[in-house]
Length: 436
Image 1: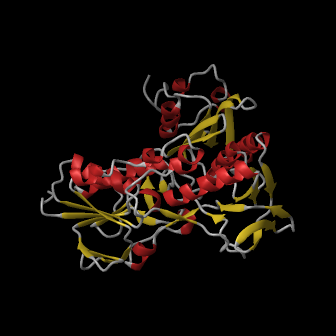
Image 2: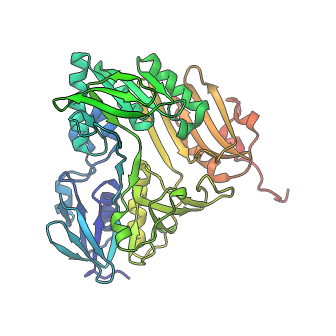
């Protein structure tokens, strides 16, 4: 039973934290709810930062999870612009940067992730950017507008989702774009060479220049401004601005200092939680980008069986993970088994991805539809079982794709590649050894 006099503290005022606070109130919790964030903006969603808000198709106000007034109306105490600098598990307290000490009965860590930094000369120049926060997106939007107006050059380190979405936005403004990537294709580590090349071709057709198989070694400048970016093959790329889009790392420093169990880096790192999103401390939970959870269906690339540990850095995980953790904090039975999901929009290509297929975890990629026309579904399989599926400019198929992933039985790859065979038909089969 949850006492009305209890205090639940949420560290991290992003989507996961905000949705956890919403759920606590929706489930009838009448105790104290405290939401702490180290940014001054009230909780917002991150996908628009590299999509609609950055391109100018979405207004700034559209990124926020709830209107600013919602928190006071629902008696959620906001502490914004204040980092948590200490977690004392024995005393059940968290300390803020301004010296405030808050007591908790249950604690949720939704501290998210932070962009990885380039460790090369020149990163202190004014034209070097990262994209993780709303302030970053506002600054980058202004930069892209100026680059487009002045025919300026943007160099992007990293051909992952963020790098490619920013590349598409930059080309929309008219900026010149060069993407530097150590792998042989775009999205190589996420989609593999088979499908990564689809995105390479897409961006090349829109004027993006790729420089594969290389890394940035130096950013040169004058009077604090960027002049060029140099790669390890000696090429000097003209640049007025540089974006580092080389991934993100879970923000685990607070948890580590408090002695909470962390997941191994080979399993994705982050705070280790069970299927109910509970950490090694029974009164502390974790959700969103920072949480590495036991998952009954999916796991690390080293796992050859269903189930394992999984850390996901996508919008849907924060959207659903925050509420799941809140219900677990309330003592409800929770088994967080959502199939990971994310989406991307680049030029005239829209896609949705479900599941998890890390490099080394699959042995076959099967496509149905027309890959050349960028209207297809790709499936990543291991021993005939569907690990993940991505629909490109094909809609209303997320549910059957996720059902295939959940089903876990081998499918016929040839039939899977045939658009005339309904996806639902792979599920309309008797269970193994079922009686006729």
